[in-house]
Amino acid sequence: MSEVIRIHSAKASGRIGIVHLGLGAFHRAHQAVYLERYRQLSGDGAWGVSAANLRGGVALVDALREAGHRYHVAEYRDREHLTLREIGAIEETHFTGRDKNAGSDTEGSWGRDREALLVRLTSTDVRLVTLTVTEKGYFLNPATGSLLGEDPMVAADIATPQAPCTAPGILVEALARRRALGLPPFTVLSCDNMPNNGQRTRAAVVQLAKHRDAALADWIARTVAFPCSMVDRIVPAMTEADFARLAELGVDDPNAVVCETFAQWVVEDDFPQGRPDWETVGVEMVDDVAPFETMKLRLLNGSHSLLAYLGAPEGIETVVDAVSRPDLRALLHRYMLEEAAPTLAMPEGTDVAAYAESLLVRFSNDSLKHRLHQIAMDGSQKLPQRWFEGARHCYRLGEAAPCVALGTAAWIRYTAGRDRQGQAYPVDDPLAWRFAELHDWHDGDVPALVAAFLGMDDIVPPALAAAPGFADAVTAAYRTLVDQGLDAALAAMVRA
Image (tube, rainbow, N blue to C red; front, side, top):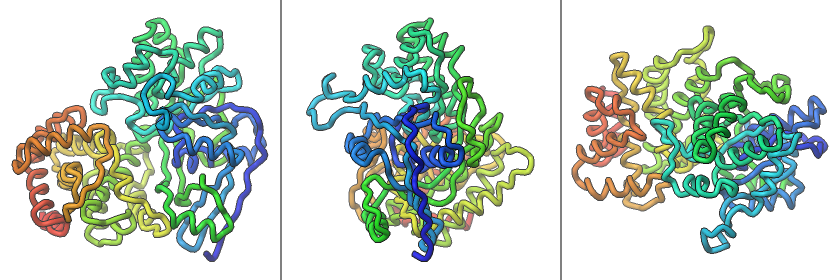
């Protein structure tokens, strides 16, 4: 390592102004970093963070407590240039998920710190709640946006709203308490990769509140701000090699995260109760996030998904391994510029081609080992906004979407849970059980299998499934992938 810049955290403020739901690596490497930089620059002590893990393990929460809520973020420009930040913006942590050691799903096994979190959410100091709970954490149908009321966790929140399990349930209960106390509502800022994420968060919360109290739902809809945001930073899961590299620099931190140097945060400026002056640390405060959000979802996230589903079953481990192949790099270039870019409506002056080229450079950062299987998680929740809406728009414009057709075929193959060598891997998706059933029912009948997957209208827009030639293109690509492998499928794309 030729250059290491070390930045220590600012003094803790002791004042909690933000509650964050979803204490994962992305929040710790993105929003918390922006808040740390803001606190160091401004000295404003009103925006300390109380963060909660809702579904992950309790170990991270307790480890952060033991470390005094200090941890490190290693930002790699490349293998030789590293900025090592100590972060102290998170000043309190909670665990509200199920204790896996409790051995049951009884009430006693849920929500160790739930009441403490709800008390924090009713503090007059708390003016903002942020979320990174992943797409599935909102419990919305990806295609329609309706609440998944039949989900056991949502059903539990409907039955016992004072003891919520889900993020929407926690927000409803906290807002109900604030309303009863005569306190103004906090602002709710989603930082997850969903189109119109603020509106979707509002929909989840209001729909759930209606099951409890129509007047409460109306109050939330009228008084609570749900601004949209777009977040961008590549944050792979930590590996033993990452921890070893940090140890060589004298950093023994089990809570550390690694990421790229690049970071972007675009936020709709709608904060009735106030907010940090984020502009001072590079946050883009805008009137409309949607164009930036769509560009990032379709170009960056859509490209990541292409690499994941095409590469992982072939034994390609990471993003950098995948983009090192000229044929996969060419596929991404074609997808971004020929299929995704024409579906965008960007503000004047936006250089989409330059953005696409910058993504290929970022994907080539060999200091990050972003595993393709990690990216492939939860495809049923991600692909509607990453691929299918854009592809539907292509067909509406009279154009085909061959890259998305190939990607869809690769996704269907991936959900079978076996690679080209026949080795099994876990399919980490809330609908994995349904995928397994479809593969069992249609084993050997490729057109029927493809039709069954395209027929899942909670994932694939019916207009896309019925678009002339799309099902045939997916079927042909699937056959080539299964019978001849990735090289042949990419060669067929070139010929086309």
